[in-house]
Image (cartoon, rainbow, N blue to C red; front, side, top):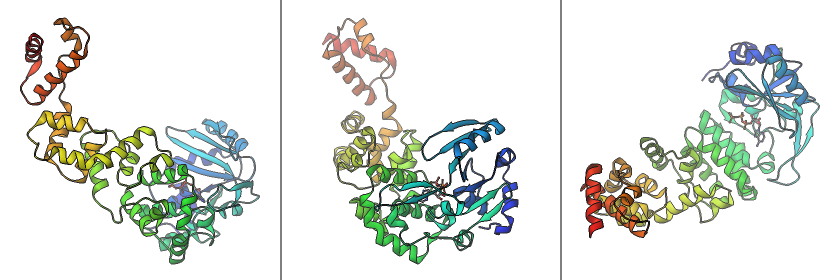
Length: 402
Ligand code: ATP
């Protein structure tokens, strides 16, 4: 990977077409900060989100910017942040430069306005994320040698207490390592190992946010394995796969192949071993928590129930339908199984062409018998005994006359 030396940051910026309207509309001095600067220097594909910091009133700045840019302004009130949407999909987040101090480890910081961009950069996570480009003249501000560390492909914290202040940075470090194929420098790695137990003090919701950010990326297995080696899962009392396995890959493939529509986070959670109730602790939605926990619990039973049943379609469907919504997927992802293949390839899509209304037309009143008859028809259809609506109706008539 190559990137322009600091002196060329102006040229890189000018080549960033999507950002030109913002540059042209700037109502005053501002700093491009965060991942945008890092990615610009790495010449990664242009992003759609740009982070600006201003020393002073960010909301006012954003208001002027939106007006000059013809963009849409949203203000958040929180620490003076605002967002300006422009063009089709691009947006700028504007924040006031700020300092953050941590009264206790793993708690949220106390925030105060900063009087310089350098102070704002000093609160950031890693040197490669602690650079700014002063606008409009495109001067690089790089107090922690971030550009050198980009060249060396290392993730380095700004100070020894960084992970103690905010242990979520350990997740972030591992995520950047995987995404960019970087490496923590030895000292940062040691600090991460030492601070690992502190992740137990993070709120569940913050842990979930970090995990979900990992699942959204290209290679979550690799990041989880790295976090495992750092002792993060042990500290959380869960177990991440110690090495990339093909479980997550298979979950994603099956989800795509059969258009099951599970989110990446939902699939990712299926690959983590955790005690019952942990998903509630990290505030995962009820639906996902129930599905994932049931899958882990029921997998051996479903597998046993299906053993030797590949040729009994109705029994396959019955066994699957006794389990939670994720169990069949999880079981098949864990190990190939011909009965489950059959279920996903064909049986899942088998639908009767008659319904309760048809049974009513045949003289059957609303009663539990309706469900029984439909169940029996479906069983026969799954077993290939009924082809089409006419045969289903004939079978229904026969069942009703019994
Ligand atoms: P990504 O490409 O993952 O979006 P990003 O660098 O834009 O990368 P964000 O999570 O949007 O990531 O954060 C924006 C910037 O805010 C980071 O570049 C970093 O400077 C700072 N930052 C984010 N989280 C933290 C944190 N926990 N501690 C310190 N600084 C942080």
